[in-house]
Image (cartoon, each protein chain N blue to C red):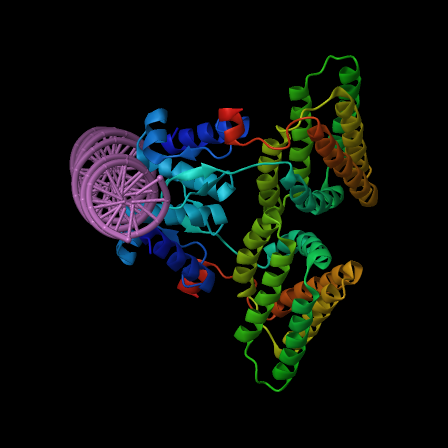
Amino acid sequence: MRASDIAYRSLRADIIDGKLPPGTVLAEVEQAARLGISRTPLREALSRLSSEGLTTPHQGRGVVVTDISLDQLEDLFAVRLPLECAAVELATARADPEIFTELAERFASASRLIDAGGTTQHGYYALVGELDAAIDLAVANPYLLQAQRQLRTHLVRIRRLSHDNPDRLLTSAAEHAQIACAIAARDPRLAVAATQVHLHNSLRHLLASAQHSRPSVSREDILHG
Amino acid sequence: MRASDIAYRSLRADIIDGKLPPGTVLAEVEQAARLGISRTPLREALSRLSSEGLTTPHQGRGVVVTDISLDQLEDLFAVRLPLECAAVELATARADPEIFTELAERFASASRLIDAGGTTQHGYYALVGELDAAIDLAVANPYLLQAQRQLRTHLVRIRRLSHDNPDRLLTSAAEHAQIACAIAARDPRLAVAATQVHLHNSLRHLLASAQHSRPSVSREDILHG
DNA sequence: GGGGTATTTTGTGTATACATTTGGGGAGTG
DNA sequence: CACTCCCCAAATGTATACACAAAATACCCC
């Protein structure tokens, strides 16, 4: 694999995981040395990260990891809502019903597994990812796909600021099952409505669960907290 | 200015203008020589172009200018419609009414100027750009902004494939005036409806005007046509 | 002792050199 | 004549070297 790809994936994962907290300055020489590569491929990686919005150029001195806070959640969902609704509506017209019927069933079983404490949060998010992928495949719209990919990256980052609880996972599984069901039934209205409900609840939960935790995590909090 | 910026802007402008038609292979050494810079900043420029979707990596051999055709217009508008509607709706809540009242009046005068044959197409698109900028400013949503910027780039490219006629400009000006008016009046429903109407007509016109021209322009058409 | 300026140092922007890979062309064979 | 395999050349990926700019530090002057 190319060195620039390695650097990109490594840095991206570290930023999303929070190992490189917001505000961290990524100096070229420093990071190149840390990753054991030269500055040239590292610069390409930093450039990609910046175009994704994970970092921003820092006044001629490297790049800094962009700040995240739950304040941005509403902005994020303000874009996510219309995009997801559009995606689901388009998917309804073009999707293979069988795939979504199966996904709906898997969400239902996931719901049972969560109830029994048998399914981890990680596995559940993987299933959500499968539904997203199935919708993306059905929609087959490169413009929509790119827009959503950007949003999903930021969503994953911000989501880390709040902690999930099993109750929400249970409800979320039911909502996803409903969405998949509506797509399988080729009912665009219902699919869009279910998506709106899901995103509304999702946002509400994220904001609510954050009130119990710290409102924002910055590098200073981590260093001096 | 940095050499990589010069290369980026130059290549971007040439691609959008059609001087570098779809299918053109941009080899690093060749383009670096043409622009009089080294390969290093040129690579950064190509990387940015690829992340914007104007070029795609070409099987380990440089990048090629991405193909455009009116077939993509429907995909583009399938994303543009929900995004513009969301933007207009959010702008309605936060906008300064005076700014949009003034814009509405300028669209009305533009309409009169077009009728008299006094306004050029270029000047009109500049005014449309001002309305977009005003909406962006009112919305103040970085996620929405980024998504729309991507779309606008592709839209400009595809729009070049079809030719405008004065009648459409006249109607379009009236539609824009209506949108600005609705925002100034703080009427989100009307603003969204007006946007839907405008985008619907815009797409219809673009598709219709294309039936009289060639359906797609590829590099082969230009080289061997 | 404080402030301003010069020097040093560090870091980025660019260019060039080297390594690796890929694609094409030519020769050979069925 | 077509197909295949191998070699070479050219282009990309990476590393390093150099130039310039900015920040930090130290020194000098007030």
